Length: 135
Image (cartoon, rainbow, N blue to C red; front, side, top):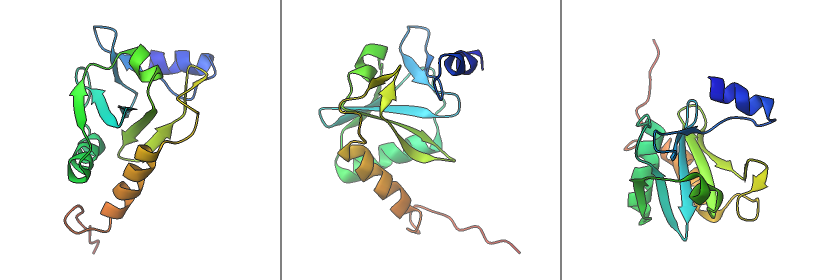
């Protein structure tokens, strides 16, 4: 929580937490993805293996996109073409600024848009969802 409060003190909306090697791990309650040259990466160490993170990896496989869990340095995240975060409550959410600087052109990228659309489409696909019937 301290990292989140430090981020608030600096005018940020949230924080990214680092692993023991100084690489990106995750945020408080969300996972992180980086897109560079059409390839996706997500931190491998120090992360909660979230369901939405797993879903993004499955979507990438289904769509023929390369996605790997690897070390993601702070510098490589800031130099990404696209960045997005994932959580159960929010799904896939684009990130366009880190530490006050734009990611690429500061707009939501095409791969992020594509995955966001696919993610929400899958909510209506019986192979990807389980309805909850309340009495």
